[in-house]
Length: 158
Image 1 (cartoon, helix red, strand yellow):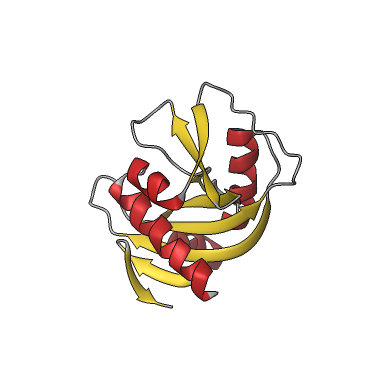
Image 2: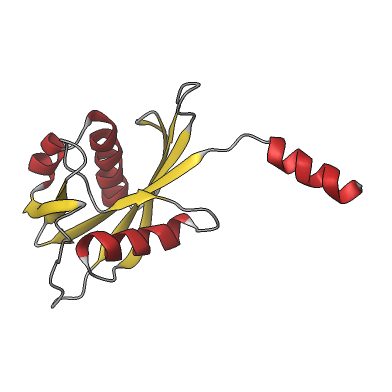
């Protein structure tokens, strides 16, 4: 009986969706992807699956979206996104990743139509407002060498 109440207790706790993004640079340009499922461009990433860490999700999503195993080298920022009753809240994690020098990007053309290497300002213009503020914070965090904590895109802590 005690075990059941513990399970019930944990099942009653709020759940937050989690997602990841990975900044990958080549010659100062950011790998930017055009998804087939929405109009704004993205960085490699996606939803963290059940029993998967954000770190593991970042590696998996890169493999799925660009056909390459990425080495995650830094945590850049976390952004808590307040939701509404329909979609709930979420926490988005942004990492820095590296490809091997000989890596060739291969998109599946079903989920990701194409990719471009863009300078940071060009990339920010292609992202939606949520991703652009998170990437901007991640770029600042990278320059400062400190991870950032954000809420709804606003940097609260460095």
